[in-house]
Image (cartoon, rainbow over all chains, first blue to last red):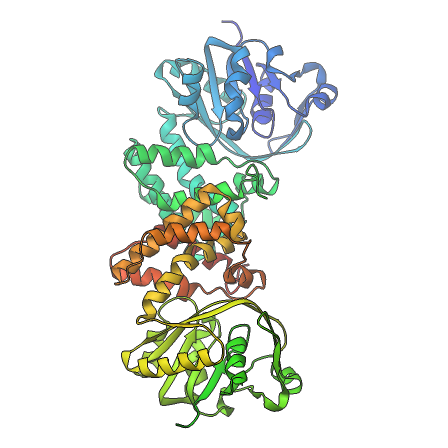
Length: 310
Length: 310
């Protein structure tokens, strides 16, 4: 079997880490960079990792500033924020083959189906990253902790290829779970993300501050119950005890800045479409209203740095 | 008929203005001050008003630093924030007679009934102030615009005395409406206050910024509909067209900082009990849920400067 060609679209904290691991284990990985391109061409890609630091020197780094210059890929790891998804299908179209497995390493729900329709693909994979990783400079990633991937595929035909990719990741030292339903996995992550990302951004609060306010704990729980009801209407059963487990785990965590709070602080667009609007629309289409989640979404529209105010 | 004794409890932007007007028209008005007491004892009370500036010199100002020193009053105008209401009954007990008319110049709902029970009074009046007035220094009030009072009384026996007081205000140049139901008037004001005070505080936004965000206009309208439903369950009919009228008036207004936004900016406690919690509790007791209003209330609990965070 010939070696698979991997493409990483969005070489930041997530894409850079997982892509560099695959490269390190001998895979043929091609990285798309944005503003960091000239820097990495001269200096390579550096990963400070709590499992041991490593780097890809310039002569070994297959770096690109445009997807048009990249080879067609067997596997495309998409690690841009969902706020850029309106551009995604045209960005990756040049490197897609009929049986390419795209894996969306993104938050929220609905993107796999959307992309499979836009590109007329029989399957699109998705991945959830349980990782603490930051980009701390051009071509410089700081992998602080964790790293487990949960993978799944929209479109059953893609399952065998997804299993191969999961094995590639395991060979590269990444823990991987393969779920029979990426949708179930996405709802489970949304159960936490919907209350805590939105509340942290609207209130400029970390998880500890939220958990110390009894009224906000109640609100977070009520929003989780709305997510649970929406998931159920769409065919995903999230067990009720999971809510209290997640809340007590969150209370026990060190103060944590959610990705949406970080986006806000860095004046980046908020991932409100895939994390909120799609959830609300899917729920409504199945007769479920989510008034507290909707309130949070409406507030996020206002504070979103991508929204202009006078 | 002997002259009525008026007491003003809380001589700030509201109490100072209306009390000074009554004094100016010849009424016997006694003012309770807090931190401004020593200043006004030496310098009097000054009102810059768009109807013409005036002042009460020290020798004519009946100023007190404690209610214990004040004479029993026929009429007590209460103009402290509702956040101090837990102290109110003991504060005014020394000056209450069996037929004293207390008039609560405060926002929110439920305070008249509460006070009538605490002090075992047959009636307690309430007032809504449609005024732009600020305290700009010790004993110094800036009356910017408007000034109309809407008065009503909880306990029908108080109606004749309330009518007299309304006439006293009119004699002092203050426009007054007397409503048969203070509760109806309070619900009508809540229809605006509940969405705009809370949203402005949680989002640090003025009315113009709120009205420029389509999602927030929708949210404000939905919250108004919740208030309307709660009012209806409690016997007050707020006509539906009033909602759109209020919204278009708000869109046409100059940018306005709500009282709750000002309280937040000045690190004062937020009036969430009478403006939100009482509304939610009354609604729930009548089988009406207000999920969007409740979300706002829960967020206000977090941002309230009176709440301590680590």
